[in-house]
Length: 416
Image (tube, rainbow, N blue to C red):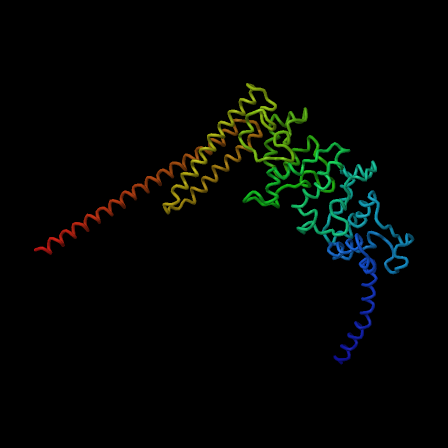
């Protein structure tokens, strides 16, 4: 009985195999034909084979149309063959799948990208003004070798996004009609954000650094409006944004449009802030807006002086703690105290966005108190170490005296 069932199962699959083979051949008949050609067509086939589309069963007819079941009618327009899609048709073509909830649900992919794209600068220029010079889906994701965004080889992998955007935005000819500068990518690479993204700052996680899409949006890419800047920056710097909203700067921004985050910190070439920003007339410095002798500038100078003293105290505290490390004493608690004092200084720098010197001074005073405690403990430890050294030398000296006396005694006994 068992052998009979086995024979029937084998017979069933034996009959089914030609059907499966035919289905597979039909599905990839475009590939079979185009693989025998040369140039760009073959390259497209090779790229598709490495794509996420190929792995989930999306093949040539899904994008290009046509009848893959017949070589003669493969490119028949009656069969829906569209060949190379027109630039203005690409977003809607991609959306025919990517805006379909049922199709995308199984992959957990958002279905609002097309709606976002239509609201973007790119989409508005393409769909409303017929400007085919702008970016479409394929400009960023590629045409045939479309990979998952988590794939390091993908053009939209987080570390590759700046270069992908830079393909167009660093092109002077492409940007000329729009009056857009082409140095953003170079500026970004020199910025603190860019340095983190490219792994040039030790201890910082590149995956957490913002790229172009984090600030401008992904499919709805548009430069932030005047009142949106603080919200965009606040996505990462939420505490700083909260303090900024408490300040006179925020009220001024609502009334006249400045100063925004980018007016002090720049937009693409953002550098790590320092206390030097409180003085001077250069770009991003307090003196660039406030006149010499004005109350805001005098307050800024006062805060710079306070920060300067505390930063020196932190450095001295670190040096004192390191000096006693070699003693063999457990200094873990002191190191934690140093970190806490440094954290208070960092918090105080963030609080400067309130423009309230009282709040800033309180945090700095608390930091100084903690540093004074650290300094006191460090001095006591050094004093204890010194006493121990003296005691040790005393004991060694006493032992040497005793040894010398014993040797002299032995020598005197020898001559008796």
